[in-house]
Image (tube, rainbow, N blue to C red):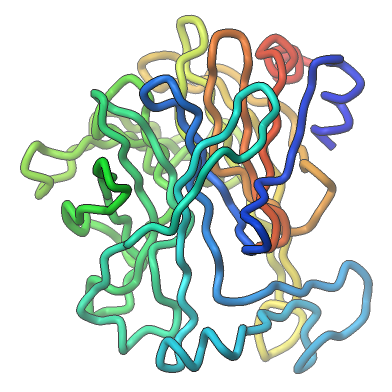
Length: 319
């Protein structure tokens, strides 16, 4: 477990739940914007139950999404994810303020059970706070697409566009901290893209079709500058099917990864969990002086932020 390692290595290590006064949130993302530590966290329209032993929970499954009936009825029989934007005290990690975001609604929402923009990653580019998340509501082909958003002074969102040239499942693009509208689309095998000024064209600016590690990495958080390189957080999703009715169990592992400024892979840490949970999702890293802040969700029902000295993470990568 990463947290156990950090507790043992770093006397200044801190961790805190992102508490929104009884609102269940998960998979938070973080950024430093205008000298403030800010976050976006998702409130799912369900609660995830997952058995960590051999008990069957529901319909021969060991994993079940329990829908909030009031939410489903209110949203016309759909499961709606909403998100909250707020600020955090970087010393105590306490939430200072938050408010619900008014996210855009797509024209094809009635055809999709899962609604809303999910698992937004935020980044501060040129004094503007951006977010990128996954949505199914802006096409009529059941595509999971990435949506690029900006947040104005009143914490509203402006739909720029549904990003073009996307495949059937587009999730977890990682924004690059010092390069506006540049994203690592796939960490391994690697592909980095940028978005044209009119937001209508995706251009591949770096690509590596080889896979130095025999795993399919997916994006968690952002690519941030550490020294002369980029630091990233990625995850690996393990799922297996035990019967004809679907996936019975899944779990996630993470790695920290170093890339050079040409997006060539330099080194990866060993796999880790945060709490040794089955469904953990890292969704944000940000460096402020020598403090690295990491945000992650647990079991789709909890949101956490922790901080440590960056040297501890570098030692973990090279261990």
